[in-house]
Amino acid sequence: MDDVLRIKDLPDRIGETVTLRAWVEKTRSSGKIAFVVLRDGTGYLQCVVPKGEVDATVWEGVKTLAKETSVQVTGGVRADARSPGGVELGMRELEVIGESVDFPITPKEHGTTFLFEHRHLWLRSRRQGAIMKVRHEVIQAIRDFFYERDFCLVDTPLLTAAIGEEAGTLFETDYFDLGKAYLAQTGQLYLEAAAAALGKVYCFGPTFRAEKSKTRRHLTEFWMVEPEVAWYDSDANMGLQEDFVSYIVQRCLELRKPELELLERDTAPLEVIQPPFPRISYTDAVAKLQKHGQSIEWGRDLGAEDETTIATWYDKPVFVYNYPKEAKAFYMKLNPDDPRTVLCNDCLAPEGYGEIIGGSQREDDHDTLLARIREEGLPEDAYGWYLDLRKYGTFVHSGFGLGVERTVAWICGIPHVREAIAFPRQMHRIHP
Ligand code: 4AD
Ligand code: MG
Image 1 (cartoon, rainbow, N blue to C red):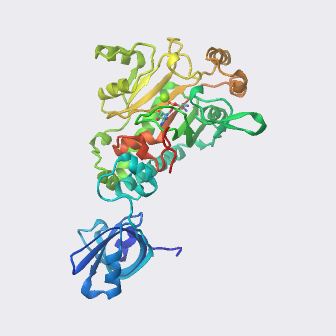
Image 2: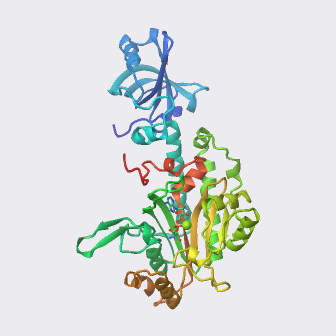
Image 3: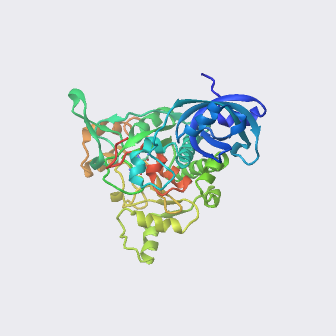
């Protein structure tokens, strides 16, 4: 049992008799010959069952197979150029392990509500499997990128005191005698402490935002990877981001071609994702948007529509940098050349996918940061330890956060982030 043969390994077993376990994707029969397509997560395998050449029990058994029945089959592996993987199986033995009566997802069209209610079963479909494999590749690429560049992984807490990105979107829970705890919206502030200890660090985990946004870009639980680098300014921070995003995309193109093909992703727009990425200041972007007749005013954050328009000016991801301080978080460093703005950037993906990264240089001056915390009316005592980092050896530092689901959605070319995670959490969805 511990060394079950997998479909992907069959090309090395041509001419041998093998036994494997899998699920039935579909069957068809012409009366004299039947075909069973099996799936085991590593690939698909066509089994051929000629009526005259197998035991009657096998033939009768094949006729009872329904979609998603789990089976054990034994047969000879044969080369077959037309089959996926280049092999097929001449089935000789069949054992039903688990029946599957009336599998709810059929080849006919289902509405998205129905599919998400059956997410636990829908995951077995070819498309959903391909998306999960691209996600897996994106995550492995993220880990490799930072490992190769000598970043130290630091896991930050998911239960936090009142501290984060935006007070209005915290999930709260009771925390013993200490009052309320909140689910982390970011690991960044803890990571800044770790950067002073270890220099180049990153955290990677789920983050939580009680955002009442029903858009195709928002989840209430999403995965974010956040690096933080001592002695990097905002410019160097953008340099790291363009290397990082290009690395992830090129890795998927190299290793996930079959999945992207199955998803019918046009890969031409992905091939060009190489550093450097274009950069435009927030102020210039707003002026250009106004020229295009958009109603944005200087001082407001960019909306999804503004982001989409800006992205159409370029064929690569674009950095929009130095936003007005009112539009961004309190911890960003004031721009010495224009204190109405902060040293930050968003990275907008092409093809209408919008913001995939938010990053900034951090305010490293104690008194300026304290003033910003007071200005925003944040609970000062909760930020005491964070201010300490500016009291004991303050340092120029920068970092960013990349949203995994938005990145996966973009690379896969799927319209909504909810398919980019196995069990999405949204305002109106917590089941299954
Ligand atoms: O721009 P955000 O809010 O940045 C931060 O949290 C910083 N603390 C990061 C840092 O500097 N260390 O979020 C970063 C990214 C966004 O660009 C987006 O890709 C993703 O996280 N994101 C979401 N993804 C899905 N659903 C949501 N509700 C998201 N909110 C943010
Ligand atoms: Mg942001």
